[in-house]
Image 1 (tube, rainbow, N blue to C red):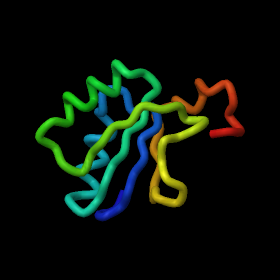
Image 2 (cartoon, helix red, strand yellow):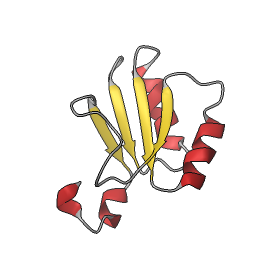
Image 3 (tube, rainbow, N blue to C red):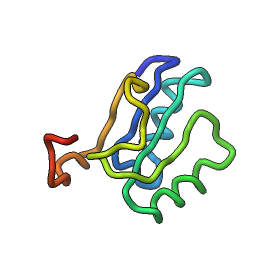
Image 4 (spheres, rainbow, N blue to C red):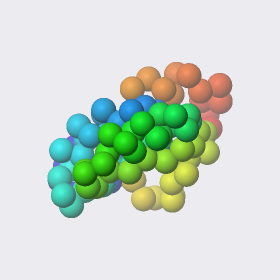
Length: 89
């Protein structure tokens, strides 16, 4: 990852990988975590308090709540394997 990039973390869970990514992209970068469960999104948001450049959204990876052409890098920790519609991802 490079300073200033916008990173999308698919299946972000409680935010661990998103927080690691935010260190790499620095204060000019941005990390968006997406998880399908409201409980994990809330947990990630709690964990993100007092952090900048990181946000979390609820959604499914087949229909991401992300504007087209707004992401530089996508990271995922195997959540794509769980999708029943891999071509949509």
